[in-house]
Image (cartoon, rainbow, N blue to C red):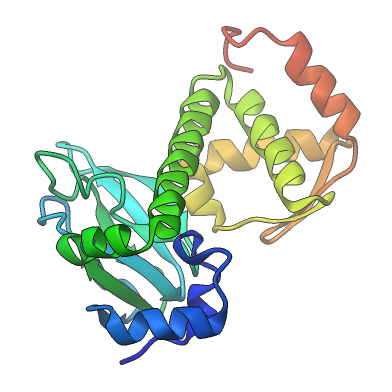
Amino acid sequence: MRPEPASLQSCLLFRGKSADEIEQLLHTLAYSVSSYHKNAIILAEGDPADRLGILLSGRIEVQKTHPTGSSVTIAHLKEGQTIGEAVLFRRNNTVPATVTATGPCKVMFISKQELLRLFAADTDILTRFIENLSERLVLVNRKIENLSAGPLRRRIVDFLLEQGEQQESDRLKLPFSRKEWAEHMNTARPSLSRELGFLRDQGWIEFKGNEITLLNRSRMHDYIQTLPSSAGNL
């Protein structure tokens, strides 16, 4: 199965390349494409991390399972994003978390050896790969900052303001469900709903389903600036 060059243009590795250039690359590149149904496991924790995945369509989630059996969602990935790049070149390169399809999806896989050959042949792609690692590191740091930002209410406001900047709008479409958002915040869903209700009652937001409207960014910014990150739970 050959991926459409246009679908690869959204991947950071191929940023700046035309559809024709990507088509030429595909003629010389060794790869595979796999299809998955909803809830299918794409990679299991502990699997060998010997290939790079590129999400061609659909959405996936990355979850880490604790020894107690509970799990926390680490990331949600969409079309064009990559899987496994952070551990591909580790000495102990095993998959650190389980990757699951949240709906029907297709993933393109490139082996570590083939990727090294591609880097040697095209230094632009090597540069994009390093940029991709850097962006992923920034996202991990943001999540750590958010989870250590103190009370749940502050973490929610932080997240909403960040989404407002990323989506460049006061009308936000959340990239995941309320349940998944609670996992992202490392809290229970009722606690998240209670805090959203408080923010709505304060006139800061409105929400319906997966859409949230920021009504008063200035008050939200004031709240973040005046509340110490070590403050107790609200």
